Length: 409
Image 1 (cartoon, rainbow, N blue to C red):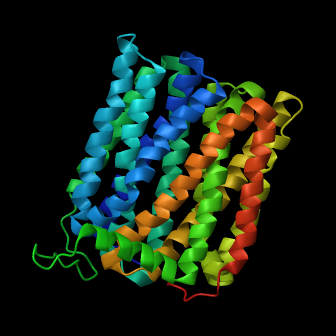
Image 2 (image 1 turned 180 degrees about the horizontal axis):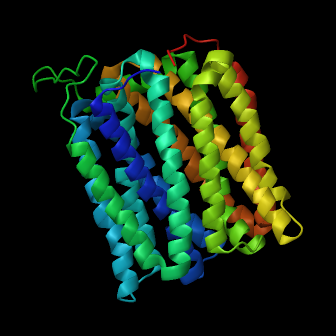
Image 3 (image 1 turned 180 degrees about the vertical axis):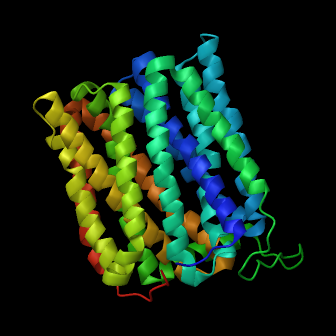
């Protein structure tokens, strides 16, 4: 097992705490819209669009900034901004001024800083961790995310049911403050060669840098395949996320507190998967792992629209979807992210990763629109089956990956 630097563990702490807050908000905000504002599927679609569209629009420019500016500073500023934004919804609830428009605006602004955080974080990690340890580092980060998922969803569901949305989203805001503090404590020098800060005379125009990132992404067949899979999975995510909580809450009649527990158990499945990441990489390789987990995730996802019968059986189906779906997604994220970080030069990491994020986010946006429109025509279950179809296409596309140079685990 590779020994990581103290700086990496501070990044791990910051990312885990930040993810904890993100997951609380991800569950609590839809609950606020569903239970307080009595939202429809189309209302949920508007919130999901607000979470994705602004980030997709500025994502490519964020990549240029990430490659020009100090990446740790971007992480800290993103956390502080998200903390301020997260506090606005509890204040609106407290003063009885909550509206769908406010939720949409807050979600949209949050998405801008979430994209900047995500792109900077993925680019910052190779500065702290040698390439040979990237799978291990991403495994630790995914394990931290899984712990955050277990705690975040459980806390969000129980807090919302017992105290309402205001207190739940206040906890969300505080986690971003703690994350920013942990990132500010990082002082060590990067383990890889630092980026060269260009002078005003030698720095190329930002449009040239943006095109360089897109060209690099398009030039590598492995990156093209990973991007295509990301687009298909993004379409699945957009459609499914629009109808998922409505299907579980209204279609299947599962209470918020029970949902929080079920999603927390899904986090345990993700944590177990993160622990297996090293073994799967050694035995199957990155390509084999990505193919295998794509099919496992597909089968796990299909359990949700199949759910029917008495309450205990419905809960069992949802639980199975959480365990197998989340576990497969965790393994996919670890290996796909590690492969991208291995293939991309550090000096272009921000731009290339942001191009990947924009492609995926665009697919999510289109999926959200489709999900909101389809739910009214073919119902929640039928819409979710269409999402499953996109996941099946991604599993088939995984076979286009070539055997690749492995990194140490």
